[in-house]
Image 1 (cartoon, helix red, strand yellow):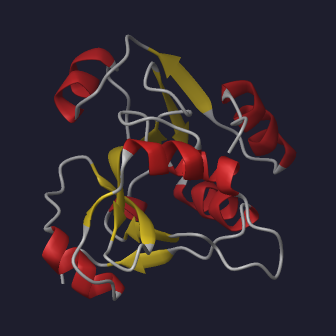
Image 2 (cartoon, rainbow, N blue to C red):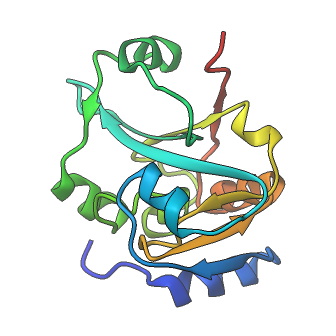
Length: 171
């Protein structure tokens, strides 16, 4: 990918879909603990995102509640992938246009799929996470947090050309 969409482009795309969001700026954060310390008191679900791949080079963007511990072996079984590892920073940048620490479902704006084309990755959403509202994600960089409702998140993901797989991580 030569030029990734920036935050303004993301917000324009969301607005074109009729999706309202709100964004809070804060110092850059790289971990869940840093996010907790810097984001302030924002109601709703706070989330983390994992960019993973298997040996067949199938990739997935996995979005879960920030408190969820993810066992990669269990996750691989749930999504029908082989043994999972984290995708490289280069692969993340080329596919989603973001860097480690800024992984977000909003990065799908940089990997939109034309109708009829096969999506380049699987989008996996934690069923329990979707029961919270609003949900909070980085807006393509880690110096802000953007709130969106679960229904609007689903509309956004589908508008990017993906049918998310909702996974019960507790089952």
